[in-house]
Image 1: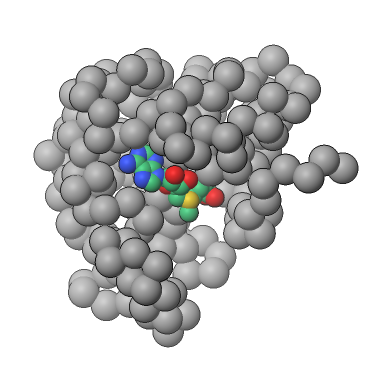
Image 2: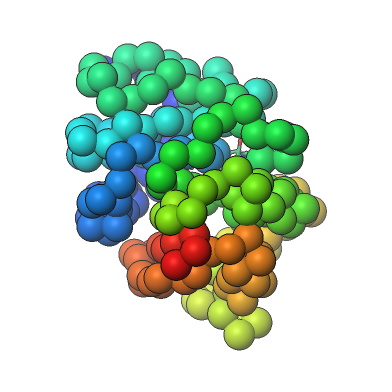
Length: 199
Ligand SMILES: C[S@@+](CC[C@H](N)C(=O)[O-])C[C@H]1O[C@@H](n2cnc3c(N)ncnc32)[C@H](O)[C@@H]1O
């Protein structure tokens, strides 16, 4: 077993996320993953949905974290990782018919969350399906005491990191032309939000 960069939360959440994505991406051909981190999700989902082409991406400074596991992946449906900072203008990566990102909106600054959605508004075509996994607040409230503690911890790590409010994210998605299709409750007080462009 190689000593790749590892995230325990990816290990824990990949099976329930795969179950939702298998259905949500059933009629999709290719996925752009934004903020792929260690590449655990990319490899697990590419292996679990071999019909799909999976494009992992990361910010330039974190490409070295993403690369090793992806290079080691045995299948042919995982594309070589590309560099993407959602604040790039323009995005240098094509946006196929599906987009996925996990645990990224609460890490990046709110200005980057806005850039992510305006990028999708500009570069995603009609009918693109967007899946976003992570914790969200609803009606101004944390959805659990553990999320409240997590948000405090995030603020200590970086003043611009924070659990995002579902309603604000939904507004950004709507402004980018995406209609909410589903909001799945996931283990450990996380959500999986699904939108479709033009839907
Ligand atoms: C908590 S990690 C999540 C990684 C992986 N998706 C997962 O679920 O484990 C947050 C990721 O967001 C990425 N990120 C932060 N700012 C970004 C930006 N402006 N554009 C793209 N990715 C960004 C970080 O590099 C980091 O890999």
